[in-house]
Image (cartoon, rainbow, N blue to C red; front, side):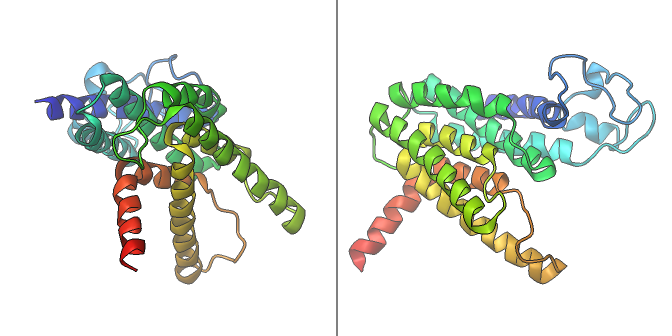
Length: 265
């Protein structure tokens, strides 16, 4: 029953995430006005705002102007719901506060992923309050995602913040000096500081590794398949968000698998 409840909560929250993804980069309040069609501006009726179901019933079109509703909307709702179920499965045995913190973190990563993918920005409205909140939670109640049954603690949380923000700031400075162009955006720096506060310095390393690996694979694929030029600008936030998500949910398994490999070797 709890999985059904968390799935529905994920769908409803996913609907709000769609509002954030559309409005935050455009500087529009996420509270007012109420949901409206982005084509004709008509208010969305409450029965047309049911996650996933309304999209199906409307056949993907606005009731007022019949403009096509992007498929991205129900997919984000479903994605967030599935992630909520996975987080419950991984962390539902512990404190409700830990579960709530990770649910908010996962939803924040979803918003960062899609905003940065489209606009190549990571909103300060997510990262700036997220950084101190991450340190407070990481220092007090959150477990170490890469250790067995131990709290993250003040030292690991603060070290993670400094490692995440500091290392990416250093990359930005060195990249600017060497390549004469921005190698790392300020949003990435603040995001990794937030990630470090929540996941610790080991989590920062694994997030950066996974994000770089995924970004490199995607970049090379785009060059080979679509003819993009080497050195073209790409948003790094989606790959870091993906790396942070994998680190949170499966980082411990990856870490102990790697230790087992070293021990066997």
